[in-house]
Image 1 (tube, rainbow, N blue to C red):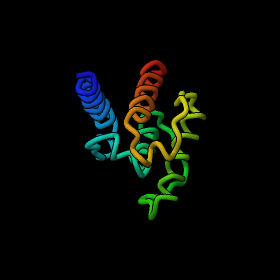
Image 2 (tube, rainbow, N blue to C red):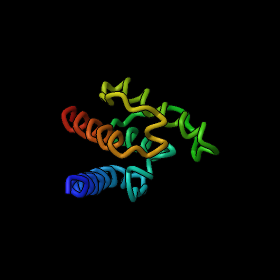
Image 3 (cartoon, helix red, strand yellow):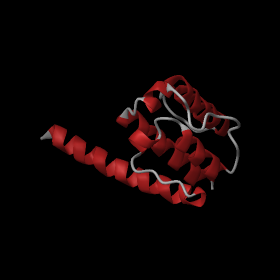
Image 4 (cartoon, rainbow, N blue to C red):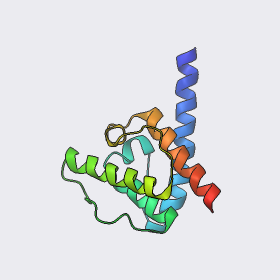
Length: 119
């Protein structure tokens, strides 16, 4: 029963955050089906950050040719978040690339909250 409630909660959060991300990425004609899988190479996450903060992260790999470049993209996104003062509470580039649901939900919540409070 508890696992079922957790799965329902996660599915609800993924759906909500994915809709929020798509709203902002629509200006670049980019679509995300699921933040847990679509942020895994860092490219869509970087695009989201650039759109909402109206600032460039600089150079990154688009598309990344391998896991190492995907991790580098995720690190670029995390460094940009640090620069903007977005808390990301211990999430690593590997967490992003590996699609760790709880970590990605927390990170996306932090991005949304920080952005909405800074507007």
